[in-house]
Length: 274
Image (cartoon, rainbow, N blue to C red):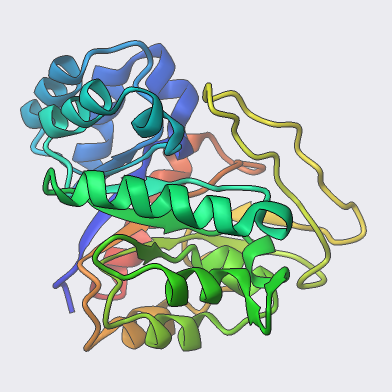
């Protein structure tokens, strides 16, 4: 217990970050988070972002970054991450798996090699569709990790979407526990698992997509420990794995303000000993 660094995916508080990054990072640190994961920088330079995080003792563990920037402008894109001092860069999502699987894998291998050569590990952050669509006889997510060596790509399992897809998140923690170091902890409520998309994906410019919620599904995000996830069991499953960073994320906030939910989540995690 207590061996994990608990972080906040700052997409969870994106409006606060856009309005006042410095003040928001201060509040996140005061809540007791050890680190953060960025998903956009609200117009700040890498030097400015790093200085703000250093001021409040927040490690920048990872970022969410579409891999196109590394194919288009490798030097500047890599140098930005190196200035931040991050260890991991996660692909937040990728479409086209049913029609462009081989092209996606080829691009991921190129970017994974580029980042590896610069001391950064490439990760893939899943949604539910990679665990409903298949490539051959495997789910796309499993095929991806079969076809790309872990030196070039490792999982950043999102345990909400693993669960919502109808898979057992504990089984997936154990399945990839020997190569995964960063994991997303997200809680939710819904009436029916695997009932179709309930989110709007963010485009390459960081804009929210249209939320495609199914009223009959009753899907809503919840602060960690306040939904259907057995959070204590998830942490127990992480014991003995290579997981080092547990990143809290909450995409939407139907009941509270985003920073309030971030505080509820970290308070619950600390209350169960992590």
